[in-house]
Length: 233
Image (tube, rainbow, N blue to C red; front, top):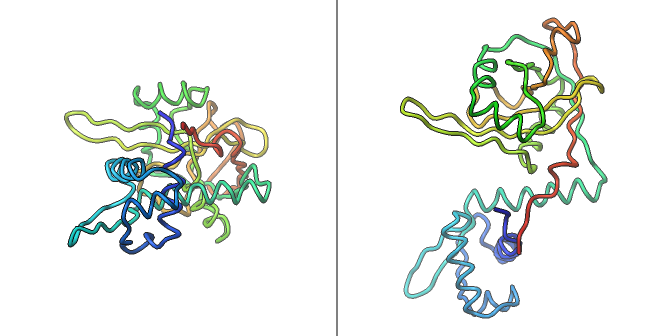
């Protein structure tokens, strides 16, 4: 189900009015004027945003106060990052990283049927059972890796069974060394910090590129497929 366009509009207005980082006292009649709707519509929007976890509402002496939650702030930050990319004509992000041997968890997770089916359906390829782990070379690359997390992604859903919970995964189409089809993955549950880039591919990248620990690899992340989120009105 796509994101409702008015979510972004209403959150943006509330943030401008002061609901970012602190509580904003505002009644539905006042809000309706700012978002150009009826008072009843403004009330429904507040209720739905609360249910969705985008804002928090508290009451005191018959007055309501609204505050953007972390989820609401993250949505606005995604919009901001998208606009930044669009206005600066940025359609890809370049990384350089140093190959290192990881913890060996990649092969296990990539091979799980629940994940594998989603990778095939959503990325268009069956990943080789394992990840190529890259230690980013510069502070700028680490900053770009943090920014990447805020951008819309191809989402792989997590799941739970009787013994444990498996986290979700954000994916971004990429090319390795400007030639090999791949995807950068950002796992919601990982032992690595933001200085590490994990890459999957239909090929064994170490073998295909004759890579050893310490070698430098270039990764180009394609943003065209994920920059425009699914929005419904």
